[in-house]
Length: 257
Image 1 (cartoon, one colour):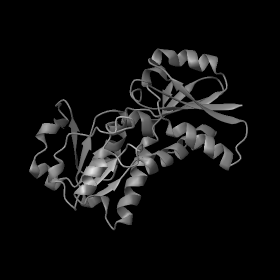
Image 2 (cartoon, rainbow, N blue to C red):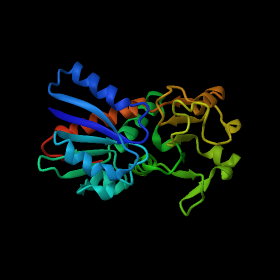
Image 3 (cartoon, rainbow, N blue to C red):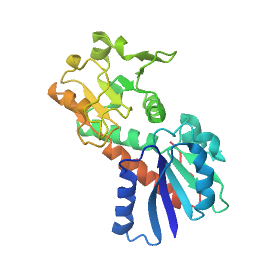
């Protein structure tokens, strides 16, 4: 049996388990299963790897995408090391581990496809990136590779970010793509949303939420009320999941971002 799974905390709702279980049935992939491994601390990861000798790969979610790195034997130069976050772990036959980042691929591909469907080009936009977690790292690198200027927005000011209170009318009018990388609005806390000045949104704005459950978050609803174009994170998740599967099942991982 080839076992795959997801680590994170909490794991109250898992896209990955449902997605891969359906994939195994649909594509008649035999002798494979997917489990959830909720852990309140990453100190439990070595024990999990030792106990589950049939583990071939893991997905990593909040809050461990950055903190998991010291627990791994190797990092993929082109994705995880460059981004500084891991969402996919490949486990080799000898038990060694290597971290990858497929969030980059999922976000970039889904963003380009979305804008293309609307007759837009990435180069036409400046972006606001809300949040500074592991997913935000992948988003930032993707935007850099797309040559898109962006401002990072966080709850605490830093050398490379501004606080939400610093989002002025000028910032809103010049940054028409707003990307939520925070978990705010995720089920069951659907009444939450990032603290941006929603009254300044227009029909020219594009709101991209990495959250996929619910399909329409409060962040997106407030955008729709102002006539903005919106997209949730489901397509990104599907794309990154398929890239993770490629990594787990390829003998050699000769892919780059």
